[in-house]
Length: 341
Image (cartoon, rainbow, N blue to C red):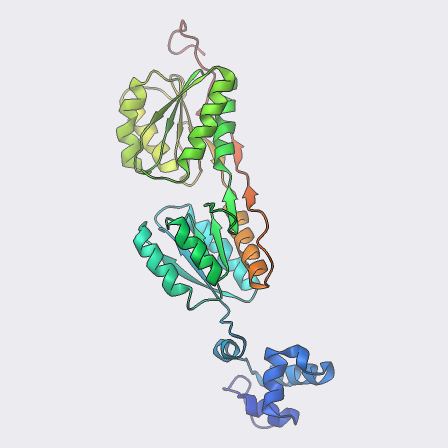
């Protein structure tokens, strides 16, 4: 078998020499396996394996036009929404023998546009999470390279959606079912793509059940902003609040507490996600659990279909799960004294 140490940069010519075939046959065995007779192909691959030969990604890219790289663009890593999403996508991509190139747009549509333009020339396909880019730009990119959007819908482009509007409506149903008639939704940052459908779903639920929805905000989705908006919420005469995200809700709990508003005795509180430890607060908070691992895997699977030349099909819609904890309680009837349940 020659004097090669396993893995010591073995070249195509070395494998060809040992296998007694032309170099071009070795290349084809790896790059266009269907063009090589099965017994020869198996023998070449077995010998290559024994010698520790690995076809380089670069060599494979030159011959197939494929790099094995997938671009993933997220707006920020400071929001805990994106950590589990990225981890799930990386794992799913590795199972498909692909590597993820991760880029962060720092919540800037302009920067995201530049990143997507540059990445689209260097990778086989792109996944963009909660994209801030213009629709027309995303449509143009999708014509040039397989593109999957996560948590954003643009026409018929491939997308994986987390259905928080239906989840937020489920929170409203839970609260209205416990006798709450005036509810507050604390909305997210200005221009949040997620907010309009959530507010629409809440208004529909309220109209159907004779309840009322007050919208507070928009505010940045941070603990500090949640603390500040607590004053508005306390003055709004509501018996229940739904917060845009867990940071908002953590701030609200603090801000309401310092104003002597008790949760849940005076006001019930729920969160539209569960990324900060809301099960450890006093009281533990009713939340929507968002299945991000599932969303990440679905996005990679959808991209694989596009890379095989298949059509994207309908958006994959993943529903959150309502987790009811101590922060939501029956509404007090107006005549009840504080402290009575």
